[in-house]
Length: 269
Image 1 (cartoon, rainbow, N blue to C red):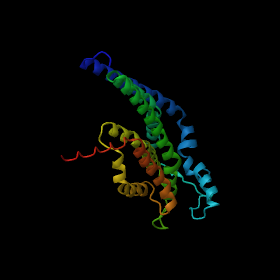
Image 2 (image 1 turned 45 degrees about the vertical axis):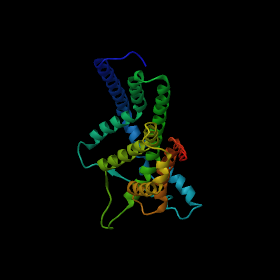
Image 3 (image 1 turned 90 degrees about the vertical axis):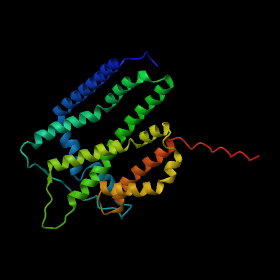
Image 4 (image 1 turned 60 degrees about the horizontal axis):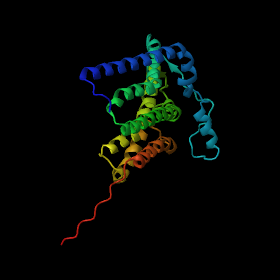
């Protein structure tokens, strides 16, 4: 460990970390603000059209598995409307900010590392360094799953769902963006589950037997979560969301510490 710092030194270091993190987010947000119209058309609104990569890929699979929903329809299109005068401007600003947060995430994690690393021993630094790297990878993997899989399937189902033929679906810009951000960011956070389990295991709070004991309950819980995330009536869409979450559960069980072998009872004399 390095030389001990006073309370005010820690406070100054924390202030520096927060300032640098906010500055990086601000720089990214400005950059995204300048190119947002292009990003909005080619990325954020891309799942609104039938040529989105996931739909094309599922259409090819549908040629071999006829039980899948019809993803080959070229007529699929979601027209996003705006009913609030200032909504487009505030959406421009808010989505720039959140994209800035997402892409500044590695820098923020690095700044946190510089803050806590002086208090760690060398062997602890090595473990935490790998944890931060792993956390970054898993966060962006979750964001990718949310954008490329979860959100498009949710949009496809909800945009086509009708309670009555007399009701026409018109997707509001605010509603679209709320769902988009929620699903993408939630999946990024959910993919941090293995890292959380690893940390809890290092603290001695859970072991591998925990996952074996509660596996049945976890499967039911994951199914419920998948049904809430994608409220579709077809089993394929449900399984597309269920499988990544279940794989996360099993992966978490794999990386936590195994149970310590029980010591044999001493024979009574």
